[in-house]
Structures are given as C-alpha cells and as structure tokens.
Length: 261
Image 1 (spheres, one colour):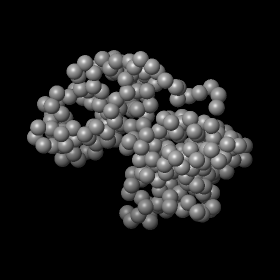
Image 2: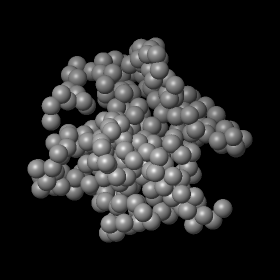
Image 3: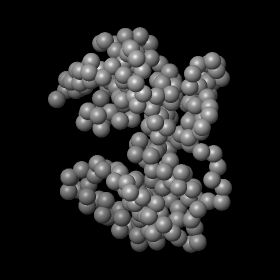
C-alpha cells in the first residue's frame, strides 16, 4: 500500500469517528489503540488522535496534522498549532496522555520546553495554561514512546529512586546496547526495559537478537526487569519493584496531579 493510500484510509477513519463522536479532540498518544493504524514514522502525514474524556456541548473535532501547521482547515478538520494542541490535551486528556504527547514532540525536536513556557507566559489568560506549565515539568525528550513515558511516570509516582534513562552499555565483546532505564544501588545494576505489548514482532531474527542482547547484558553483571502494559493492573507493577528491591527515594517531590492550578 502506498503512503497516500494509508493517509486517505486514516483520514476516512477519523472522519467517520468524528461524525459519530463529536465530543472529540485529536492528538497523538492513543491513535494506534483507537484505530490500529500503521506506525506514525511510516506516514509522512502525521495525524494525532485521542478521545477526549470530557463531554462538551457542541464541541467540534480539533486535530493537529503535521506538517500543515499554517492551515486552519484540512479535509474537513480544524487544524491548530502544535502548542495549542498540547494546551487542549492538558485541559481535556489525562495527565499521563498529555505528558506523553509533550514528550513525544520533545523527542522529535518538533518543539522545545522554552517554546512551551514562553507560550504559557504570553497566554496567561487562557484556561489550562497553568496546568500545561505544570505538566511540562514532567515531560522528557528521552522518552522514545508513549509507553516509556507511562513507565517513567509510574516509577515517579511509586516513589522509587530516579533511574538513569537511555543509558548506553559497552560490553566486553565491544557490543553497545542502550537500555531504557538503569537503577544502580548497593553494587547492583538493574535494567528496566519498557517492553509494552508490541515491542517485538514475530520476526525470528529480532527475537534471536534480543536473546543475544540479554545474554550479553547479564554477563556484564546487569539484572533485567521487564515491564509490560498488563503489569499496571492489580498492583503487579508495585510488586515487581518490590521483588527487585528497588529502594524508595527520600523526597517524593511534587505530585503529577495537582488539586488546583
């Protein structure tokens, strides 16, 4: 299937969804879950999608479609700037989803923290600006996926020590591996891999490479802890951290969710 066909199919799906769900804001984070769409890096036209968790009377569908920042309309959708989209997410979506979207665009170098903070300073009168400013402080340009953002935030909420993110390991066999998170304490080196549910395909070579990678890291003295989506159910994530003996940090710091903004 050529790229233009993929884009048209995705636009048709979004159009149908918007007709049946007028109380919707479109952004990045949960598009694949809603539509089972291709990976976004395969699409030159990036459409961000997530259902709003608030029902607002007569609300129209809003979308941010890259690279059409300067257009106010695109094939029937209202188009807003990226920073305005992030404000919409801060107001209408969950904290984790909003932070995931901010982190995604920081990782892609499509926006900077300074740009967002300058926007917040100049638009103080807008509703939700204070919340956006607060959530930006929890974003990270090192997050390579929304699931990685989720894991990082869950670690923060759990009150454990802050791990090193995107750490590079150079093994004795000269191979280099980058790990998602690394905890170092009391002489132990524990790698946390944020695997999600679809990180590895059915490709035999990919599975073999991952087994080799894990063997190399273990020989270097690393322990490997894997976290998947279902581990956030029924307290399993907290139990995993306890099983590996990940210590708590002394100071818990600010909370992701504030009562007042």
